[in-house]
Image 1 (tube, rainbow, N blue to C red):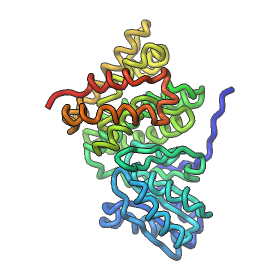
Image 2 (cartoon, rainbow, N blue to C red):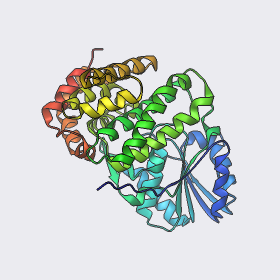
Image 3 (cartoon, rainbow, N blue to C red):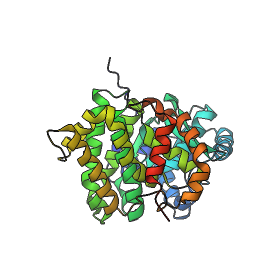
Image 4 (cartoon, rainbow, N blue to C red):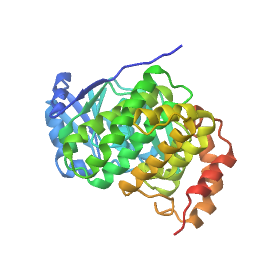
Length: 360
């Protein structure tokens, strides 16, 4: 039986943040990071809500910790808002979602992504870090009631962030398309997300702002796909490596995804081939279509100036070797492995780590 749960209202386009006023909020709690607080964007978003009272929690850092979420939860509970707004990239949204979840209040949660990558604005996932390990929280109550995709917030994104977040979109799409819980609706969203992001990312990276809403929408579509279908080995390994070495999630996905595709192709080759054909990379032979998919991901990674090895991403071979056992254990414990198309064993994780390690 194919099941798809649609809960989040999605509003997109220039000036979409004005829709916050529709909630008629009296008390607004806004979660963001120091950047959006210091440049005044957080305050402007708060004003758009027309709330009478506002509190801004702007301490979110990359890879938010359990301790930070606990601090924010205490402040949220004390303020007792009727509207909670998450403003920022995946870290801000994940932190806000966890805070709202643990506070168990009555406030509605709205997510406003400012990067085109995590898809957290529509997912049941939130990632928190504890003791150098990233822990995915998965619960339907983590899903916001509205996602606001305002293209006005995308105009000044640096090229590096476009590339980093964009490869996360591609990874979400690829992994959810072959995940064990995939169905016809998630496949449709994953395929369109991959096709749109793959086609528009080079132009966005080059500075063509008119395509950025398209990538932004693709990120949300990919989020809708993976929250239903699940993810896989690439994300499990990226969580393990990111928690330990604090390398950005998108860079790690860029390094790992081609190798994960090659590994999973033994059981998921037909679906990878379908995805390749949807983007014009295909061939009548599945093996050639999968090879084309992998090679085009490598080419795009190079065009977006993303690292090709873990060493290029800042993880030295020596540091990787000394942490390999911990990385393998964290990977195998990650819930993303449960929906990978093939069963993951320790030797496969080690094999991929050796393949992508690189040299200093």
